[in-house]
Image 1 (cartoon, rainbow, N blue to C red):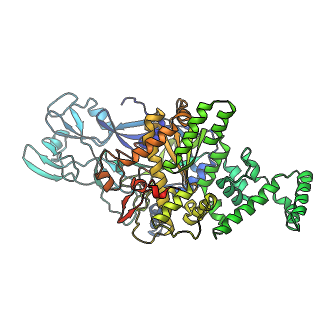
Image 2: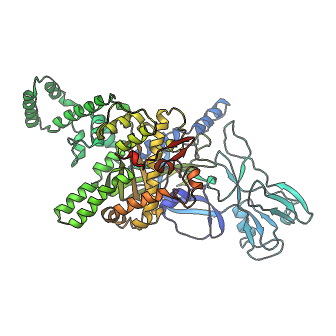
Length: 639
């Protein structure tokens, strides 16, 4: 056992309990976390955690089957959010795993069942048979199950009571594949068959087999942490805002950036109280504009409610736009759209500065070189379809891992397992939490261009009239209903474009377009930003057609790297992102097979969707499924 250092964001993706990893030529398994209880309000996390866990059908099935068979209900996760321990990771404990070795000198197998046995009997990893010093090397295979179970190999041996009697002469014909490798007795020159199988000892559903399957320890599906990212907004304040009947109208008006929205003090948009219904009714009784102005002036002076005019007209403006596109307001969709709330909070309540804001600052300070640089950036936005970019000094993102899976991250195929360990003498369900408050840039993609791309490819019917910016935004918002889908669900959708597209398939298309754009910018930006790509992350706001690129490392923050990139290198970053989409090291193979691979699109860490839902074809055109599509970057899609 020895120490080594990893960044906390890397720990969240690769080194949580149950993970198997390679370090300095040996494999290890994470057993335990040293956590400090988080000091901030966790109500926001608790709400999302319970929602997330409830969406795992095999966990629910496991609980139902155990009750139906007359046994105790098997609930892997507590239903009471108070029973979770939310902790900030301080240290990670790990141990050598798996514990099946070969001697590099004589090739004989050594098998140990517990790490304590190895420590007591052979701490220096010497060969028991030829006495070679420190010669034992691990066989890199493990046994895993869909229910989260993990075990080492089961060695076919000679029998007998002593270690030497059991394993003398036993070796492996290691083909580097679990399926074809075999055990054999080299002294008797006889084969002992395949590497065998273990039986799971953890709860499983009735449809699952008892036997575990073998994997190479370095395979990515040996351990898959479930990751939730949440913007750390004030949960109680959000609940209070939703009690305002005008909440959906304020949200949509803020999304559309209508002039009547109070941007300087965004909270004021929600201050109108229901106690002023009399004033509202009085307004409705006015006969003409002159009377209306008189009543508004009186209310403003006597009742100190200047925002009454704003909210009243916001409602009228939104209704007019909805009428123009023959679409009705779906209040439930807006109220339940978590990521829309997070986007608006980030844009308006985290001191965001757009390129236009920065241009005005440059003019005020008479920095005309800076003004020219930013003006050039604006002219380049259309290359990637960007409508606007907003710089945040602090982007408060919570990264949370509720549990892990093995074999697959797909919630319909595997069981989600919690992290359980002793905290102050009792076993608790722990939830590792990472809070990052570093700089970020939020890129909003033009809804008009997305709409045109969908229409030109026949994914949706053409609208009866040409829609402007606001009409396109609202049309797409209610047409796709992106706000009702979990992003991880959309990342898993296999795009089938050769048939009539339902609402979910269109939503998946838009989400995967945004996700691919985000990855292109991340991969292209590493040389421009001056940070390793593993130190920057993405956060996607699907229903507002936006994504954030933010600094995810904790110590030292971003040291102003993103701020400098925004102010001086955004044009170069946009050009590099476009170029990055055009060619992959492995083309034409990559382009002909989904057009996404580790050379062009994948991230080692930082992608909470584990590189699912990516395809450069959406940007540059080509075949998706059996359909030839026009890419988002095609000149035909320009507006």
